[in-house]
Figure 1 (cartoon, helix red, strand yellow):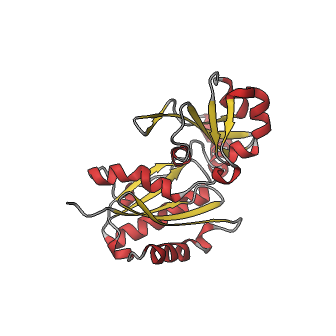
Figure 2 (cartoon, one colour):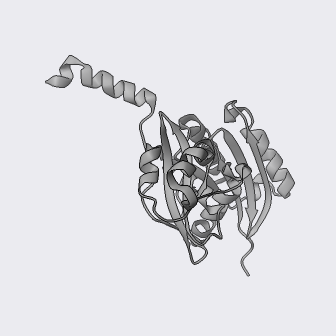
Figure 3 (cartoon, helix red, strand yellow):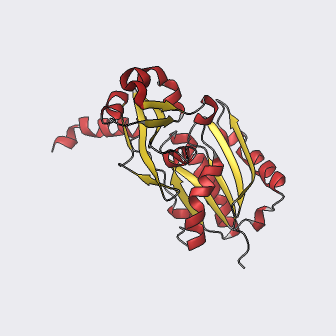
Length: 241
């Protein structure tokens, strides 16, 4: 019999920082912290403490999992670069998963559709739509960044909403959708690294992994800095040649 796969997973896509160790089907340890401080301040300490709680040495981890986004540009870079460093050092495989999908996984089992929402600021949300099929998540549409009204406009059936965006815009969602809108308890709107590990587990088990250098954030839109650079290039006289 194959030994249970040991996975170290991180989620740093939002102001919530989460670390988990999954051993086989068992969530051995999970630690989550919500802070306005940069995740780089406490992430490595959280990793050490989570490994200690799981009674697993870093060298014994079989693979790493990390949320690739969407989410905070800085937060995503911190989580991904941390996994890259650990994986390079240990020569271990990696899997990246969707931040929205990891949120939605918390809703199973649920008989209807699921909408995961994260606050994208600028009066927009990151939105992902899913449903359960054979105890797994099925994506119903591409993940997008868009105004809340557009995110709700195509919903005509019961949906369970999850994520900080769902908590932030709860009343607007309820006003727009009425009885079609259902919500998870407020404390479940936070992302969990344990869900990142569970999403990554089938891929790690099947060898569908990537090297650390191939972990790339999925922002869904350009950063403010990139937008400023793009505008500067567009406005430069030579750009009109």
